[in-house]
Image (cartoon, rainbow, N blue to C red; front, side):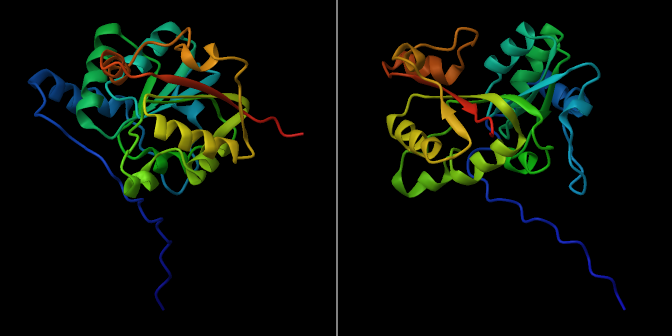
Length: 235
């Protein structure tokens, strides 16, 4: 009698672009040669302890949807003792970041070039010290709101992998998405908004580098909002 096969989790529906214009030859070479050395390929049957991705790091920070990687690269350069995981399914953005990693000789970045939700399911609990979700797609049309990354399921997944007291940074230039996200965070028991006054959300984080999406929004005269949440310490 044949044995039952293990159940394979269903891959979540992905929305958004995977690839744009053809890559220039050198960037394609980086995708072929450098990315395999940095890419995270978790075994779906085993939890992934992110510390095992690095030889000498005690803290791990995670950026979801790093775009072209300006912020991620700047953080990695400024914090060489920290291990960074960047998630981005857009191939052209990954290739752009790889060129910076090569040029700046950054050794503390690992990449997941697919839907971040699949990686979150694999990461061990209470193992991430800081999370960045900066200028993610606001999906402005009402019928697309359910595609927004900030939702109860993803906040549950992030709360599970974040250490107690860990910091969650969220930034956007879309006021509809801002209101949506504040509501989701407010109703989630594991996150507390760290805001004492207007400067806490009007000013870019002191140690943050601007992303190209942020720069574009500011040039268009849009307001950008920068929120900081803390993973609640359970009593």
